[in-house]
Image 1 (cartoon, rainbow, N blue to C red):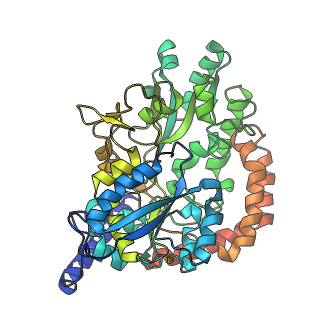
Image 2 (spheres, rainbow, N blue to C red; image 1 turned 90 degrees about the horizontal axis):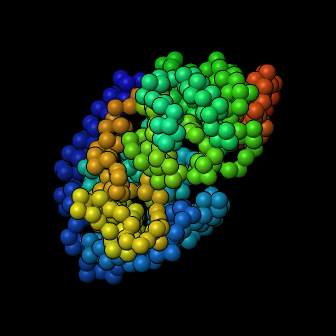
Image 3 (cartoon, helix red, strand yellow; image 1 turned 120 degrees about the horizontal axis):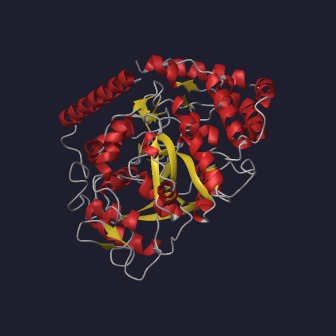
Length: 507
């Protein structure tokens, strides 16, 4: 897998260099507001009437009351640099797919949007609803190609074409255990000595005995379960988990996760811990997530995917100082680069301007700081060391944006307490990870959508109970049988066919 990733990076870089040479030879007369300057300086069409770009972004569900003020400040910059303004269209996560589908099916203007493998990216491409970005990147997005490692755009290809540019974030994850440092210190627990999930068991037992009323192992939620976090580093879910690659096997055979020995062993371990009282009795049904439980002082620790700086992030979320131990190597599945991207819809009226603005999101620190942090002096203040904090007397910012969602966040200021090398650490984290041989593969489930719906229902029936330890693992055999009746083998066969074609085309 490591060789596969080196090969990918080498090929991707070669393609970038070749495209750059071709553009240099054949495009000397074209306009270019991109480049290493990030679209800086006066726009080449500054004498023309400015255009307004519409940008659809999921509503982070936090304080967005000051978005219009932030938008005004951004537009002061974009008017000067690309002779355009942007209007953010916030759509709630729950309504996203429905509203976006309505827009894309009609003629309403939409120039930029967040896309994701988990939000019908491949289906949108198949329907012709997204603009191929290859030519636009070479003409107006050169700053993106200079600022970002190739995987951030080469890893989003479908049928050989780029339809999205990934946000700068972790494309991979290592997995481990995180716990309240005050309780670790109180009981002289040294997490650094723990090397596997199984070795945590004596710690859970100690907390159960010494800290009555505190749950030793809090489950993140009914989707991110005890079992899913334990086995995630072994699995490339290939998008939906209905047919996966087992990364330990180092091959490209799609298998039924629920039939693997790794899954059975994890389910049996979760059941053992559940019976011992280490996991909450209502873990399979509770709607109370781990953050709420930890904040309320009800939990000791939890499993999670991790990244550089994760403990600082979790300390802010939970209200307790968090210490973590990483128990797996950093791994990246097929969908890492396509988890969150920016794309240009076919509904756009201004594809060139849209790419120019996208280019600024990866090259212009002022714009990125405005989007992610808000307005300096109002939403944050800068400290002498270059980091930022909330203004005096302010407990919660009036502007909070999901920083990982769009653009190049390595351009932004770090919050107080973060490692000064956070962004470089994150880049190295991505570069040094073990990647799936299916990196960049996207499964098109249209031909098996009936089976997908039926299998989804079966998974919904069994997953939460088995993976929280609430249900006896003997039920696993019935679960597998019901999956087969619902058509999981048909899905796996179709996924294998598409993966084989993908691998053959990308050798």
